[in-house]
Length: 434
Image (cartoon, rainbow, N blue to C red; front, side):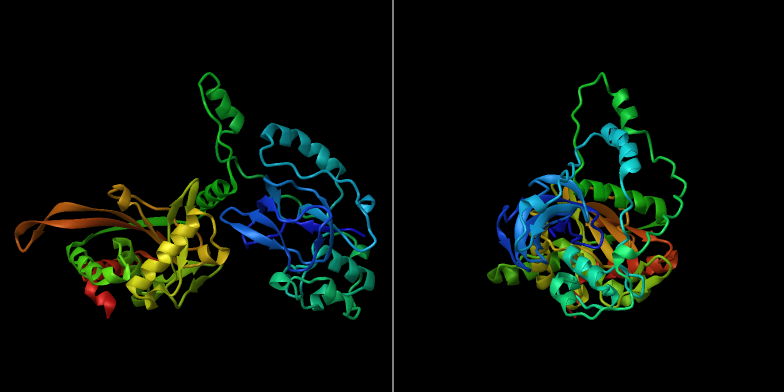
């Protein structure tokens, strides 16, 4: 029986993706572990490995198709002796560009005719079991409980070889299980704002250009809307005098010139935040739904602007790294972010983020927390400012900062301690080398 190849979940938050490129064509032989396609998620383009072997019978989703939901069939794999005639005709998933009105009209018909999909198998602790379609079918035929099978495929996925030698378990075949009744749907949430149709009517007599939302823009919109609606933000503001830092940076860059290293002010800010998180460990934390999770290392995320959105690559164990090491790693992450070549583990995680718009001349701003982080530091430009010192007015290079804090994780006094520690390191930069 032909095996469906499904759109994979290449990151924990992936719900849909774009099939950027097929690396095989219909009729090609495929082995487990072969790279068969490139999938574009909301943040990166990643290679997709086959977990079963066979011959590519039919490609269901064409290159460039966007908005393909996770677990949607994208191709069909044939086993030895099977032909394309064995493949049941099935329409390819439609691209995300389908108009909203057409989706709304098609929804009732689809709801009325579609059969309920079987629930994916669960492990003993309630977690989902990842298995290839062929492995699930063999397990069902043999009465094997997949919860007791260890997967040898990519990311622990259960494949054909894992179930062929397994002994039947007590669990009934999946096909014999009666589907459970779906829970009653919750009350629909109030709309976030005017509908697309309403907005289009308002501007019907004006010349406009519609810009379709790609995966990255959709994710940014969803996550930041969630952040502002669910995270109780409060804001702490401080300024730091950068004169000593600028002198120290110039001295270090002169010494490092022969090695091709040039430290930026942002490198010092990253290091200052990493050390401050170690000095105020209660602030090095994230919100974990029903608890607070404190981190031991300082994993600092830094916002990087890219075409159509932004990434927040994470510099892990930043407190242990030298300024030159942080500088080199940040340059590498930023360059790969701009070409969407970061892997999910490189932009997920961390407890704290930095968003620096000072390089664009922005004097001060308030940043939105990136969940589940406990805080984010918004950094403005360094500006020549009159400052009173010892009763005299002097000109100093002053940089404004705003710490956006999740009040569920960090209270006001604790946030103030963290910001004070950051300012202390920036105004006394030589201590960051100790």
